Image 1 (tube, rainbow, N blue to C red):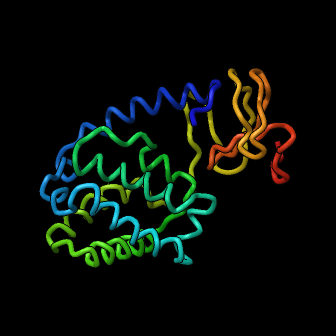
Image 2: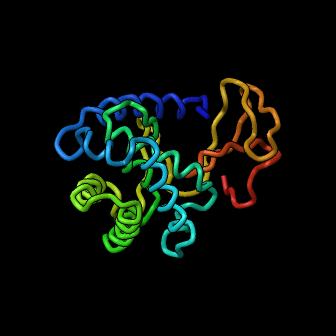
Length: 211
């Protein structure tokens, strides 16, 4: 859900720029009709991702990155992301991989480990080897945006957003607390979790919030 306020507006503006740039793709990231047809379009892609995330959510090395995120949510986000690449359709409205993974410390070894799990799922689906290679080439493009030795802060329109913890914000229109589902009136000060974006009213202020 879109959060109102200064930070929310800045995020929206930056997102619009990134969204338009993301869909101007060439080379490896150009639409791939052969791959999309081999996936039986939506059906095959969803089947592969369902199999893949079943592995991820039970894997001790990878599951830690999905705490608080349902498997269905992870599948849907990756589905729309990959569909937008394979088809060229503007159906992905999430963050660029660099932004989405800003808080994750991921080594080349862990990136390769994740890719091997994906490759295993692609072969279990029955995708031909040359198409497995093309899929891997797409994901390899984002290695540089994801692999890093330490997390980094986000900066939206000059507003720094820390890597961990919470930030305060005054809502401009009424909304609901993500903890108690109680009403939060316009003008009220709330606390938002940096990574998940969850909004908390004064009564539900998390115990580990130090601001």
